[in-house]
Length: 324
Image 1: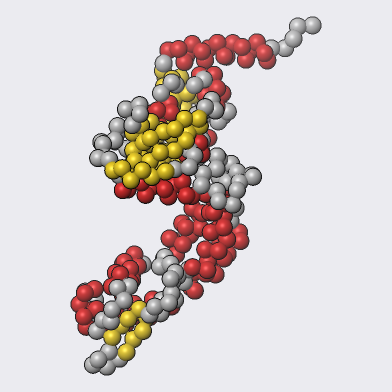
Image 2 (image 1 turned 120 degrees about the horizontal axis):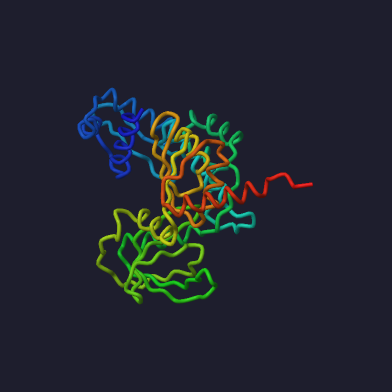
């Protein structure tokens, strides 16, 4: 299916130039036989693309005008993945989100994606859409226009300005070179070089105000880490403590229990794993691991082991039978 999809996309790229192609010329360009070309043209027609053909010595292939958004050329797995992505993105919409929120836009697209699929995929898409639910996990609202404006500025290497509201509620005017937009922990962040502070900064996009493009170009700088996601994750965990525990449970089981935590899980055997995490509370993480029901050993740091013993003493005291 991947080869067929690739051929169809190459065929579309040729036809979307608007010119007429003789059959042999198009076959040569695509390195396919005339028979394969005819079959692929028929597939495009089934997908809703109006390809005009004329047989004979003076025959040609041409994509007719008048269709601005033909059906998407997706295979079965890609259609399912698209629906899943829209469902998950829509589940992050806040309860009282505005119509222009990213999650709400995803919900709207989820409700009509089958209209843009080939006929043969529409029944499957409709069935999936009617029977699929994603548990709502509200996240701060981000407007699609914000993501689009910053993406365009980063691609063009153009300085932008915007008002930014800090965690404490203070608003300041920022002038930055935008580089990457990163999604982590249900939030969207911008990694940028702050021109007024001469340093890398990350900005939560739900706190970014109206973005203004300045038309001032900048020369791209090397990222401060191997990836923007790596830099942002390190920044978010910088004030925390690194802990390591060995758990008598499979990596898959612990990964499910810690799915909302920033943790590295290494399988040691089929029934044991090592967890490395950044935490802001030793006690809270001990309880989180303990609630998995699996035996575990605190490896490091020593302070983590000491705090674990103190917590155990408090729990034993709290659960002791009162004296008469």
